[in-house]
Length: 70
Image (tube, rainbow, N blue to C red):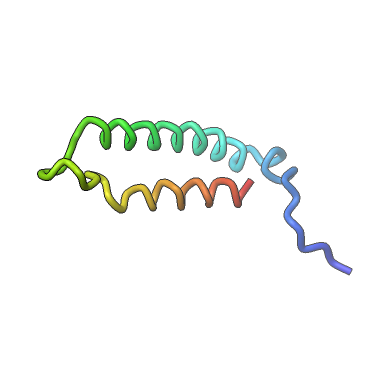
């Protein structure tokens, strides 16, 4: 009777959603590259443990939310 599926056309027809995704995707790429650069440049005291430990989790969660909303 009712189709509860998500129509991706809503994103493209509604300008606020479209602008949000246009900003979100490059922002995620910048955040990912910056975190990778920080990990490569800075090291912990012993030189083996990552500097940005749990921040990677936030980056991947952010990507999952962006993909899920598309």
